[in-house]
Image (cartoon, rainbow, N blue to C red; front, side, top):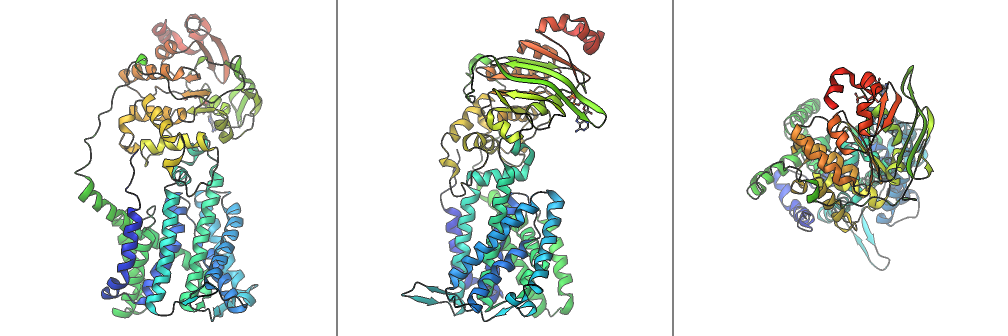
Amino acid sequence: MTRQRPFLVETLTLIALVLAPFVLPHLGFSPATINRILIWGLVGIGFDLLFGYTGLLSFGQSAFFGSGGMFAAYLLTQTSFTNTIAAILLGTVFAGAIGYVIGLIALRRTGIYFAMITVAIAEVFFFVEFNPLSEFTGGENGLPGVPQPNLDLGFFNIEFTSNMAMYVFFAFWYFVAIVIALRIVRSPFGLVLRAIRENPMRAEALGHNIHSYKLVVFIIAAMYAGFGGGLLGLMQGFMPPDAFMFHTSGEIVMQTAIGGAGTLFGPLLGALVWLYLSDFFQTVLNLGASWRLVLGIVFVLLVVFLRRGLAGAIADLYHMAFKRKSQPAPVASAPVPAVTARPAVVASKATVSKSGPILQATGLTKRYGGLFANSDIDFTVNHGEIRGIIGPNGAGKSTFFKMLTCEVEPTAGRIVFDGKDITGMSVIDACQMGLTKSYQINQLFEKLTVRQNLMIAALGELRGKFKADLFRSLHKVPKLGRLVEQTAQLVNLTQRLDSPVSELAYGEKRRLEIGLALATSPSLLLLDEPLAGMSPQERVETVALLKSIAHGRTLVVIDHDMDALFELVEKVTVLQEGRLLVEGTPDEIKANPMVQEAYLGGVYGEEIV
Ligand SMILES: Nc1ncnc2c1ncn2[C@@H]1O[C@H](COP(=O)(O)OP(=O)(O)OP(=O)(O)O)[C@@H](O)[C@H]1O
């Protein structure tokens, strides 16, 4: 497993933070602007975890920024509370609690609807702060008189009053915030966040409860924003009401877009450019009211030409300069060795019984409006069996698989898996029980590497459907490395482990698709057209691969390639127009006149007999 040099990023960040107050003033940054950059950069770290890593675009960060800041400012100005650090930490907890409640509501929807809910929530908070709660928040006057930061240890009190002392205070908290975020993104939790960003449907199908992951990261982002709001009050000596304005959320989004989403440092770089240019246009160029127009044009140019933002551009330059020479030559797509060359090493989940039916479906029906995709199907698979399913296009094979894996709820009927009625269960729980499938159309995490893809699948098996192991290193998850390497070996992708999925050949992607399902250690694996789109040579190789997978496992395979399927399976189920037509051994199916008539037709019939 490739490991980064430990603490390299943290060390570089520390060096940059030490140098910044000596370098930036020579470039025209005022001390107040430098501190403000740190605050925006810190708030942006939380936003980047939410947007850049998880793919959730929120316009509601102003609600948490304002709430955390107001809570801390209220404690420090309206009560006898004097400990500034404790006040902002309490403000952070308050923002997190609000984040929990709002997350429960907003995360019920996805995409544009989620984003729109967060816009509405930001507006509600702005209204509430100005009207019903103005007694506590000072309404349009805000809360003046917030003390400067101090470190009160009871017996010892340090006050951060000079520009440099203030900088040290903010830089310290920025460093703490980035170290925490780096731990999160390097943890199993952080990898699942990226899986959600890339392909939430597959992340669920691999057994991850993505709603819980999204809720936790939403709360974390709210806490980062609340903490930043507290710092703003301390920096200005005043908690401004405009912290709640939609404009605040907009700036966080724009700064992250300029700096580069999914980098953690992007928001800081974005804030640096954004705040520098707004100062420069207003005070040096004296552009008057048109400074916003010019800044808008600069924003568009940066976002259009630097697609991965400033942080992405810097990372690309670094890779070009230092990494290219040391990169190994591209690995050619290797054929799958003969089945006897490799034993089946990925264990399957233990089942309650070891013989008899592992899966029984009775009267399974799925109706879409007036169309019966599946109608009254009775189907049983025994432990250790390899079953094939065939049927013409539109016969209802994929819908049948979707119902079996609980991706789609049946209109009628019952499914019993490993002795338990799983009808109506979630796809997450079905996968956790050991029932999963590979997809007809690849459902991979395209921007991640093969290793990360397999890790995501294996983590569902090793950690269960949800675990908030935010600070655990991926390298420390027991059995993870071994399970990933065994699966990669089984699907012959060992040499491609560190390649991004987008660079794989089609046949390799198909094998990874099977590998993802395998890494969940299923006791019953459903394969939906595993040979689709493959060349004749790849088909032969993949059939060998499927034979090796089948050891100690129950398989159900849909495919249109009769020759390959009949060579692989012991029994075949034929579907036609959503109904079960007939079942039998491959020879019985080949000879069955009903199958020839109804499914194969004269031409295909001759091919397979
Ligand atoms: N979500 C849906 N909404 C409406 N109709 C659907 C939906 N999914 C499937 N169908 C319909 O159900 C029928 C069965 O589709 P299904 O994809 O299960 O067939 P299939 O046997 O897997 O086909 P193929 O071999 O082409 O993949 C088709 O008529 C299809 O149009």
